[in-house]
Length: 193
Image (cartoon, rainbow, N blue to C red):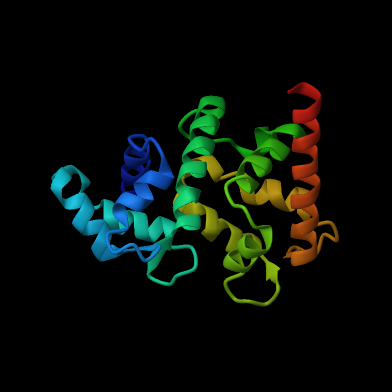
């Protein structure tokens, strides 16, 4: 829960480079981190980090295969950046949907989309019952481990992505939202540097 998340975020604040950190933790060099590798690497740093291996696995093992690959590990770094930025904007409790303007909703969704490289893969992870649609409940469950910073995300995302207003987001709707927001971000960057 909140303690595990706080532990992961505190540890991430000590990591200078996620690629180097991943290589150092990957003891057998097979390109994935197991719980045993994490426990072995983290144990020498003392009791204050004792719960970190399990917390990393719970938060990071997005595909449920029992280990962390570099892509999953990278998401920790992106998530830390996003959480830090959102905390600066909204405080420790995170944003409240009812108080967000349309631009702030868009910004929240954009920050979340930037924490994963592949919208299709993310969609299939969130769609836990594999019916081809993401429901508000599935999205809430997907973002809950990352803390109150993302509490307004499900409503913001549905306001933008559920274009047919059927109460669920299809893969096509999800892809379209990701494309539009990424194009907007690139356009803003090119115009304003």
